[in-house]
Image (cartoon, rainbow, N blue to C red; front, top):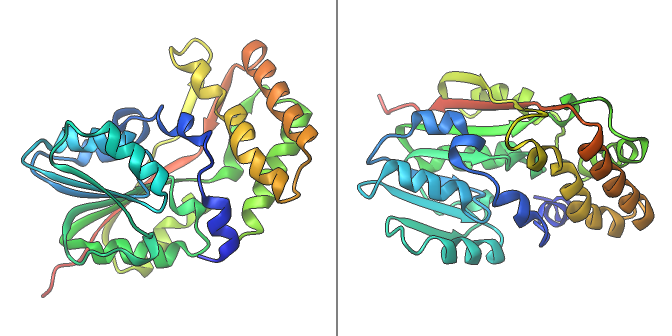
Length: 270
């Protein structure tokens, strides 16, 4: 990871609000379908561990689950929230240098590779960590295909374009979801499957308010990084956040974030 992408991928304080809203059932549906009691699972880029705890609950105490993240702050938060799960461990580790070989039944990363300048290198590390015959599953976005109805305010649209450029300039792919199949083929994985997991919310859904406002939360957290990096001014960031919150409360009817789950099997030795 180049130093620019590493800095931009780091999770500022406010992003825990977003991470902690996620659950296995709502935020990684394909993984939830695949997990079985007794499995060993590695969750790469686990953040504050919200989804990882769901993984541990689904595989049960006969299974083992490990969550790793590069952020010591988030790992400490994950440990503090998971003391009741003896079969779940969290460690600070770098996705580019995973300390595991042929260890896990399932190795997964959700919304993580999009933040990397070298996603292929990270995927190779994930494959190494999986057992022969084990599964690798990656869930990620194509940020170029997001849909809002009606269109959000101009101040936010300006911010979102700057957000995509801020990412792209550090080497991150804004269209990663649609290139994952080719990455899995290059990594030597077999029995590939692609599942649409689009995050679609419509006014009237019970969680509409929390889901539609995610981009205001991004403006409040990631936006600070963009200001520091010179991509928007603080006034532009504030205008984007405030106008989006008003739009979300009064006008928004629908949002769909383009999200794919790609899975593959690590070949067994012949």
